Length: 66
Image (cartoon, rainbow, N blue to C red):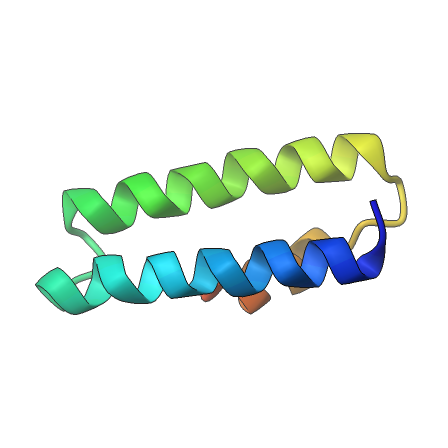
């Protein structure tokens, strides 16, 4: 995948995360925890596929705080 692909995925995941957070206004709600878990799993797969993948940058772009 290209940087453009990673950016597009992160942008879309950020929208989903914002929706999950706006429904509950809590980073401990089940919706947010599920979202955050998905982002971590996706980022792990991307890091496995691409050794130059910047996982921390991707997580921040998705709206997940480290």
